Structure formats: C-alpha cells, structure tokens
Image 1 (cartoon, rainbow, N blue to C red):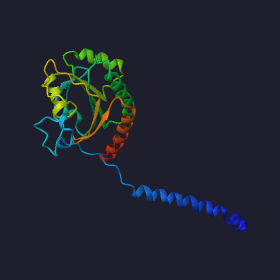
Image 2 (cartoon, rainbow, N blue to C red):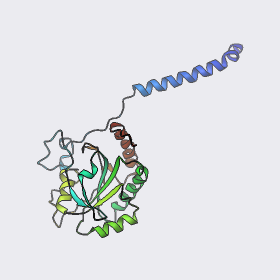
Image 3 (cartoon, one colour):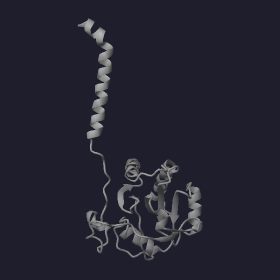
Image 4 (cartoon, rainbow, N blue to C red):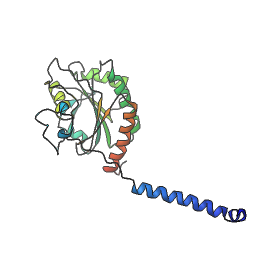
Length: 227
C-alpha cells in the first residue's frame, strides 16, 4: 500500500487539486447570482411614500431637478444620464450623522475616482443656510472632487419633494416650509434608468461595504467600455 501511494503520489495530488477546482467551478456556475431589487413605491414602508404614490407598483423613476452646486453651476438630472448614482441628503451645519455620512461618501469617492460611470450626489436640506459659498467651503474641507461629487442647494420645496416623492427617505408630510427638517442617514443607489436599487445606512460600516458590493453588481448589469 505504501508503495502504491509513493508511486502515484504526484498523480493523486494533482488529481485531488483538479477535483477541488472543478467542484469550485461547478459551485460558482450553479450558485444563483445576486440581482439587486428595483424599489417601487407600493413595496416600500408606506410611511415613507406620499399617499398619492403608494399605489405605484412599477415604472417609478427619480424626478428631474434643477439646482446649483458648490461651484455655482446649474446641475440637472441630465448631468446624470446613463450614470450610476449614490444619493444622500445632508446639511453642512449638522453636528451628528452628517459628518459620518460625508466621511463615508468621501471614502467611496476615493474608490470610484477612476470610474466615470459612478457619480455622487448630496442634496442640502437647509438650502437657506447652505449657500454656494458655504457648500464650497464644506467641499474643500471634505475633499470633494468636482468631477465626481456635487453638493446641491436651491429651492427647498423642490429638494423636499425629491426626498419625499422621488427617493422616499422622509416620513413626515411637510412641504419644504420653513419649519420642515429632513434628517436621514440613508444613502440611495440609483441605476442609469433612474430606478432605485438600494438603501443603505450611511453611518454604518457594514452597510457601506454592502453598497460597494452592490455597485459592482450594478456595473455588471450596466457595463461600459470606459470602465
């Protein structure tokens, strides 16, 4: 028996390694590939969806907008045509969750700075305070790269309508009036067809890892020759 193993040891080792490799390939081939969901109003927590939209089960798209970025440039939804976008809502004077969210967005920016397909977008929920000059100061402090990440200010009602009726990140039913305040930790993943594909806690490291993994899945769903 020992003679047999000595004689065929190399063969048995190679055969064993090949068998393991084949099993791994079969497992990968048979393992179901993860597909990101498409979030529609009717499938979300009704508290997050305006009553006029709760019946919608398909074809929801994030809305058009016209706002101003940290450089005083007008930014619209057209600037994000055919892009994968990570969206959040923040304000520059926030002392609690926003600094963590901004830091995590900056980490994400570093990862995607050579990937033109992915863009970052932050809407100010206190636009009356967050002027262009204030946003520019905040952008410099946090290392915002203009080519990848826009901080937007503008009409408060328009921004709040986006939060409540487009991205579904706010529970209250305000209209963007002077006493309204949206304070959400959500990062929202939007695909090139303007559909919501994921929600993540922008203050949570595990959720940020999941967001990064989901970005890779979405890139495969929407391949581009440039990346």
